[in-house]
Length: 443
Ligand code: ATP
Image (cartoon, rainbow, N blue to C red; front, side, top):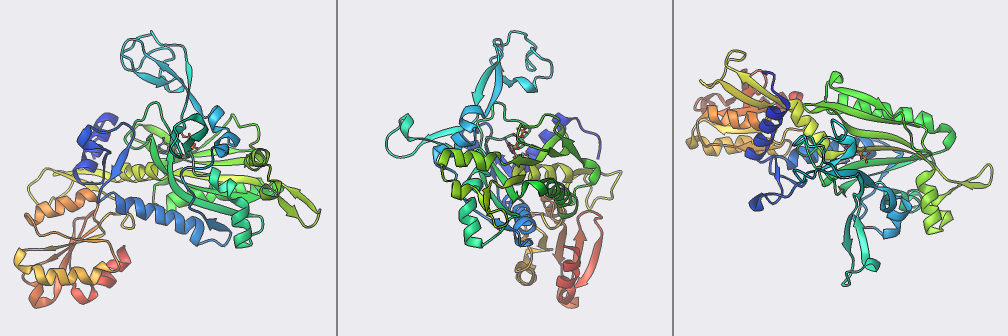
């Protein structure tokens, strides 16, 4: 693909996602709402496939991690204990000329508005990121509650209920996926910084003496998830170690991906010490629910926590950025006389449609649908009979469909179909009876 500027690349990706029903602005009909995104019919399968891969990898394939699905609204004390109500804020400044608002730590040149270049900026102010609502009929401070800013706090709160129900002993983890909300000052880079997003987090509870070993273990596991499970090339990923650590932490590292707009965080792996459990103990005064009992020393102690925390939307964006490609007539022999082919080279496991069945003519609808039925139970499939075959290939390329199966007039005689590969654009004749086995090796 030709080198594109960040702005051009992102504009093309955003346009493609809207055009093909992958991701578009929430409330588009009303002009959209900044920082909120909807996943369309071709975005949902991608998002679900990634979430399922994470859940399988982190929960189902392990005996020492349990699942949880907690509520978005928790008791307001949870957020006082976590420190979010007091401290979860960004320092921001307003430009007095163009009225735009920025996070002070994101200004490219300190004291200069990145939009209009003015130096007339307000004094930095703290801006809390928690989204507030009211529970019950009375809208006053006593009934105020918050949409969770991260999915991990309910894990700490439910720690003992899960431990008892599952009879787990340290070390073990609790994982959950779900929505989180942050009133981000400056939502940007498509879904990268949204105000409503999905997190996938796992809190691993262990003894302090073994916590750094577990930290190292999870750091490696999470790296492997990106390189092996998601197929992201190693050279597009890097580790960013935090130099400034929270007072309770022994280590913190981010996994970053090289987005078109620069290296940016997709996941944080954090040693959280005993901070969370001791804070919830202090605020709830339920010591027995926040500590574990040591049979040897006959003493209770707070478990130490190692956290893995990533954003599902950022991972989907990473996959889309990594998959976006354009073929030009010079570099590829195109199916038709078109000079540009937009293609999402998504791994088959995450492609919204894995196999598209295309009858060469509408007259072949019935047998083509039969072929699709044979594949539908096992794969995500689509059926498309409108427009020229070349146009249909283009549409499938744009949503990343790895295989198109064409049923033509010869198919009725030879009981075979043509399988077209998205990346090589090669076409192979495969007997219908062998189609499933052929595709199974590739998907
Ligand atoms: P950043 O510094 O980019 O704001 P963070 O350090 O505040 O991120 P965490 O609080 O550690 O992020 O959240 C864990 C993960 O949740 C991040 O690695 C990211 O993938 C995701 N995430 C956080 N904020 C957002 C957001 N506004 N939009 C989308 N995903 C987010």
